[in-house]
Length: 156
Image 1 (tube, rainbow, N blue to C red):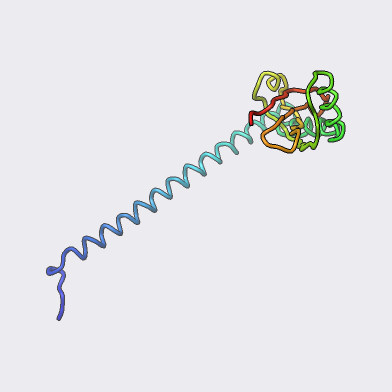
Image 2: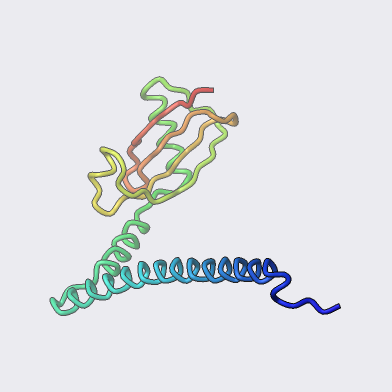
């Protein structure tokens, strides 16, 4: 038995709907990719313009200056042992408990608080967790000069 197009028109309508859905999906994906590429290319273009202006003025580009400042800061960073000693000294002077073990990590903070805004390029900070139970006491200490920036005891 031969089926002609006139006898089953729903078959062609279903193909048209599926084909349209695929075409719309491809169009949306293309638009999303273009937006991402344009956003990234705009950032790259801004960086190139800023670098060109600095070179024409005879200055170093900001990303080179920032990298050099970070290298200079790293040369002055306290060791982990010195940071732990500073935390223990601070605890003794202020009547706080600083019994080990210590979990310590060095990280670079961007400006996000009163004391952090004073540093134009951010600062290296040791984050020290005191004790074995979490949450516990967290101490942030400046990794350059050893000052205690924040001492907070997290509720259990």
